Length: 203
Figure 1 (cartoon, one colour):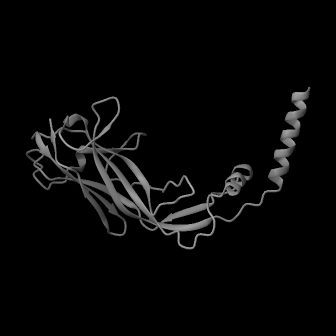
Figure 2 (cartoon, rainbow, N blue to C red):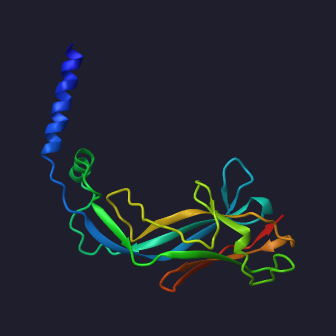
């Protein structure tokens, strides 16, 4: 009986707090896709590992990629306070920060520095041999990639990851040996974000 009474009191308190809620207006900010960071990974073990030199099995080769967003937080008044987080939880308030992209990722391309096969010499587009995964399935690189910066703490860095995942090599090159790839992220405003991997031997 005592437990039922406590639950009734708790329900009344929650309902009372909800009725007193006053959600604050969200703050709106724009972001642009600014740069990329990449590393070579080896998927041959239980978990993928970043590789800085040596050899990688061709069937386990991948490129770990992060697209970074530049967010203009100039003039921000208040963000991520405990009281606002509590209110958002109790009152079903909208997110305290609303981010809008000024551009979008229309596609990703991968170019080989070294001859890949008889039809793909040095400098060729080999995007068709890669697939992107963020851990929830695979995507071809010639498709649009939706992004949204993830902000988790009171400290907001200037550059925030908005797309993270791996470009996995799905087809082994006909020519083993030293290989190097350039990743190019194509944006809707015509800009191209590029970075080149280190040279590694594919075996």
